[in-house]
Amino acid sequence: MPPGSESERPGEPSGRIYSKSSKGFPRPQTLTRGPAGPRLAPRLAAAGKQSPGGEARKRRGHEEARPGRGEASLARRAGSVYPRRSSAGDRRPRRGRKGAGVSGWAETLAERIEKRTARPAVVGLGYVGLPLLAELARAGFRPIGVDVDAGKVAALREGRSYILDVPAEAIAPAVGEGRITVGTDFDLLRDADTIDICVPTPLRKTKDPDVSYILAATEEIARRLRPGQLVILESTTYPGTTDELLLPKLAAGGLTVGEEFFLAFSPERVDPGNPRFVTRNIPKVVGGVTPACTRLACQLYGTTVERVVPVSTTRVAEMVKLLENTFRSVNIALVNELALLCDRMDLNVWEVIEAAATKPFGFMPFFPGPGLGGHCIPIDPFYLSWKARQTGFETRLIELAGQINGSMPEHVLDMVRRALNRQSKAVRGSRILVLGVAYKADIDDLRESPALDILGMLEDEGARVCYHDPFVSGLELRDRKWASVRLDAATLREQDLVVITTGHSGVDYRLVMREAAAIVDTRNALKEVREPGHEAKIFRL
Ligand SMILES: NC(=O)c1ccc[n+]([C@@H]2O[C@H](COP(=O)([O-])OP(=O)(O)OC[C@H]3O[C@@H](n4cnc5c(N)ncnc54)[C@H](O)[C@@H]3O)[C@@H](O)[C@H]2O)c1
Image (cartoon, rainbow, N blue to C red; front, side):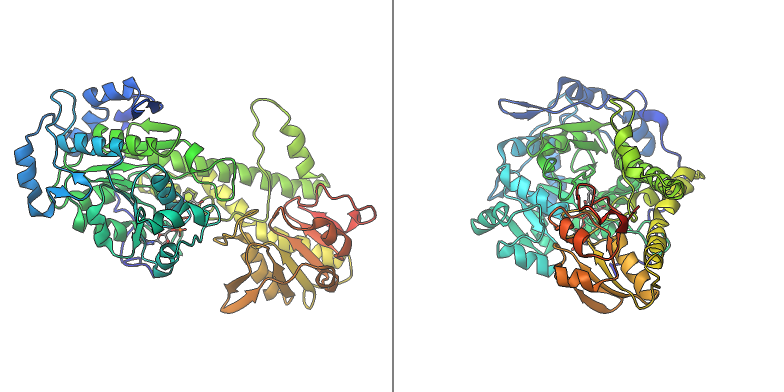
């Protein structure tokens, strides 16, 4: 149980409808790299003067960065919590540039980021946080990683990576040379100039957002917040989280956002297992609480990613991520529904989609499957629908998509029944091998995997179930330990049915096709396999 998870309400409803004042703010722009490192495109630099979001924020009672705040007064306010000089260099605030909307702290941090003397920290070293930590080290910083999981910290200290997309070589040398520091102690953050929060954002049993991990991490940061620090939330969450939850906690100590500390939201878009798009070449959307916050966060990410896209507010940035994932959820629901229809009409839905995808404009292929999986697509739309309800709005399409996608494991079970029926067999007592338990191909992530639902449902129906997954050697389900079986001819021949639930690329599908008695293929994994005489035993979604 995460700290405070049951007692905390996810984001006390503000009762406010989203401010419409963001209209007319600067459009997203690109951060460009200059000879002396990344620079904001001129329009954004100008935006610092014109204070995008200024009106809205004034209404909300946030101060804008005031130019030229005196160094002495800032140092006084900083008091003893702030080291006047550290091993990483001088962090005392510079005098702000008059008329530029830049506080002394902002200027100092900008300079430290540019010179790579700033120390970035990442809180939460999972699928999102660890690649970021590695990229920050690669960019020339000496990053700090904090995670509550002592096992992960121990692995990293030994130079081992537990994330497939992050090779040990991206971590081990930097850890060995002391360029990466990791630990479970939040006091490490006292040395940090920037702090990225990459903690989980799951759902509660009621399908409401569980922001307890964000709150726990923020409280730790707030306790140690000092002038000159930039905090960026990366965890996927509903619009308003940064403003409504993080800002009050961080500002409670008396520091002024946009002037003495900086706060932004930047959604993570990492796609585990995708070798083409990695942290570096996936554009990063950034929305700060004030223009200074946006500028600094853009500058930080400009050191690690090729393109940074500033937006006018944290809420816009939060909504961007939810739009992206809801877009996927709704489109997957559409093709899942089409798959159910094609099943009745005896049409191959895969052939239909692939032919439709030859249209060079206005169509983007999505593919059906046994259900949604992973930390994002099955979860994020519910963050949006929860927030929508706070404003009295019902997101009908999102709910419907959730229902259709959620019904897919049941449909797979129905296919299993039909495939066995054709052999005059019942599910009860049949030997069934589930092929692939990761939620998508070529990764080891089991979170929300529909294959786990299918394993459980088959067991409930009395089948004798086993699984094979080249990426997942063992798992725990229903208080029982399961081990991946070998995928060889003998194992396949023992089965009454094989259900392909994940289309891992390294599997010998020719062998599966030859040896299995019957196959339910929910991923079109057998598409390229030609084994004359074996076609009839395939039941395609
Ligand atoms: N996995 C993805 O593909 C993906 C993609 C885009 C966005 N996201 C989002 O990014 C966020 C993180 O996801 P993830 O997949 O990296 O999760 P993860 O579970 O892999 O990693 C989260 C890490 O945070 C640590 N943690 C939990 N509470 C903490 C605390 N209070 N302080 C410090 N560390 C803490 C956990 O031990 C874990 O190591 C989520 O909001 C998720 O929706 C994930």
